[in-house]
Length: 260
Ligand SMILES: Nc1ncnc2c1ncn2[C@@H]1O[C@H](COP(=O)(O)OP(=O)(O)OP(=O)(O)O)[C@@H](O)[C@H]1O
Ligand SMILES: [Mg+2]
Image (cartoon, rainbow, N blue to C red; front, top):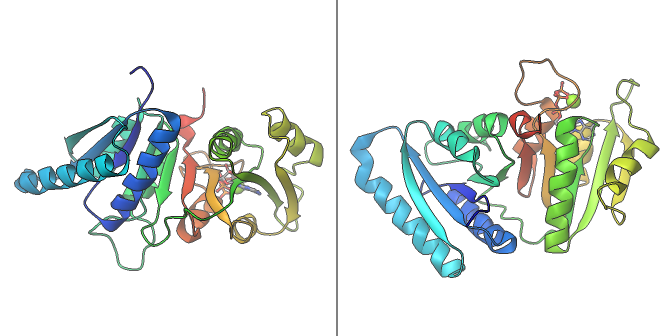
């Protein structure tokens, strides 16, 4: 198969099971194959790693027997193995948190690290909120190249899953910096064929508006970075806030995945 696979990070956690479910459905929709990647730091747990992989393979086969799937075990930090896998992947899908993470944190270190460094879009799903029920894709647009990619990814997903699209461009109150005009927003969406999309220009805190306008979302799509911030930063504040608080899966377009 010459199409790029969908990679799923697995660790045996409930969040990873939801990630496998999401990724299996997406592989079926895109008619591509799945690659399950389990990364571990210690070789002492080799038999547990094999168990995690066997269990995940069985889950995929019971969900979609026609989807081709393979699996491998990487030695090292999970985000390192997944960033490596992302170089040849269409998408990387992970659970928002694994087994051994800090209590109270909604997203684990693997998710943050990967969303900052992967070479393809990253989908983060939460175990409590599989998000199969929403009716639209919400895309955050600030005119950055990452948000242009977010439009591509979001419109494609909505098209394949027959969902409505809402594109939000929020202007922080009290500043005219980087203001997006109606014409610019319309042009960015329409030149990608998104003529049916709902376009929302609004003043106020971008993350608050994005979260509020995503109450009925199946997927939120954002760049990891926007037009602000400073150059060394890998994840902007809007992307981080939405990742922490979204009640549906979030697709993040890392800087390293944006063409050029
Ligand atoms: N004003 C906005 N309206 C809608 N979506 C936005 C807005 N700002 C950012 N986004 C979305 O969030 C993504 C990440 O941008 P974010 O603002 O988090 O990073 P940044 O601009 O690099 O840093 P920061 O704004 O924290 O200084 C963007 O690619 C875009 O998808
Ligand atoms: Mg910004």
